[in-house]
Length: 162
Image (tube, rainbow, N blue to C red; front, top):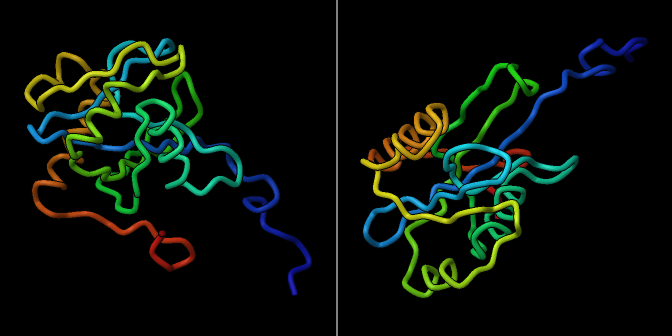
């Protein structure tokens, strides 16, 4: 029996957890969003709320921003970001799939909230000019993992997420 809990358990560090989705269209272009609070384009996604399952946070943000409800069960990349203007964080990039024509129509017809200022499809060669450098590097690594067939299942207490 523990008489005292370690400090890491009684006062855990504050850390952001970001969840993004890499989504392609049938032409191989990447789905990106622009936001009112960040310059440049980024993959759809955002932070998880307290006690929100990570893959469901990615799905919630992706649906809000694009209208798509996707099973985000595989991780293509993880990216640690040290504290700068925000607390340190870890970002996960989930594979959202290659969309069908009906899903592409859903994106085109969706009306996102005012915080989403743009929705674009860009080919990988165009990403460097449109994204902040850290976002571009993260996306490039996720695309490389996808091309190589490398991904990790997202597990919930050792069981693949549904």
